[in-house]
Image (cartoon, rainbow, N blue to C red; front, top):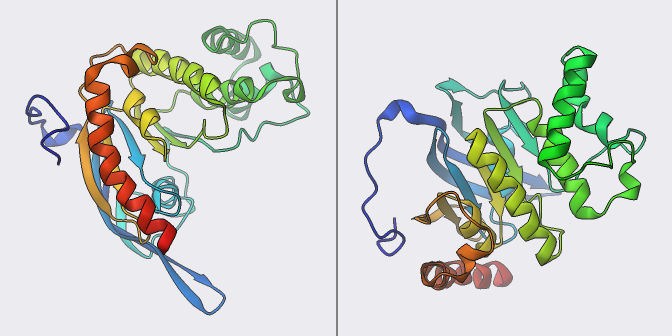
Length: 277
């Protein structure tokens, strides 16, 4: 772990705080007659309530690792443990929520009905669903749009709906795969504010995939940097900004500039490797 990445030595934590354990994960895909090695021998732990960003260039295997943690992809080697139990590919893991790159909203359902979909599947009574949907709508700044349909919303508003649709079922572990990647800079920072506000209250364990260093620094407690393909862990960085954080003001600090410059050098090497691969 980089010495520059934190101004104070991290305090040791007892082993029972580990929520997610990734052990020697590898994954290869068959493309026509060619084998593509996407991920090689990736290992790391995520502590309970920790916000971890998986950072790296496109094609470095970040999303592949996230999808193996989510049980959506079967590893070629290695294991994932959540709360000490082995994740089995194709079998849903309780208390885990996933926010995808695309909002995947149902166009025929209103915003309120989209947000409440998971509660409906779980058989939650209508009056309770209504109360919880109203709370989520307020948290996401979507009041007045409850009866609207996704086609009437901006990209940022749609992502707020997608985020709340996941959070309303109260997952203890939140997996996020570049959920704000398609948004413009202003809207992305606005979404950072929404996510930080919710996370600082709920304290879920979060794994957040991004190729945006500024985003990783704004949100995360720790950054895990992936190499170019095949994805391996190149380095880890503690992000020591105080919480609660302001998504704008944190970017104006000397410490932000210091961390950005240091990590960017290492990340930039992987961008170059990725282009030449």
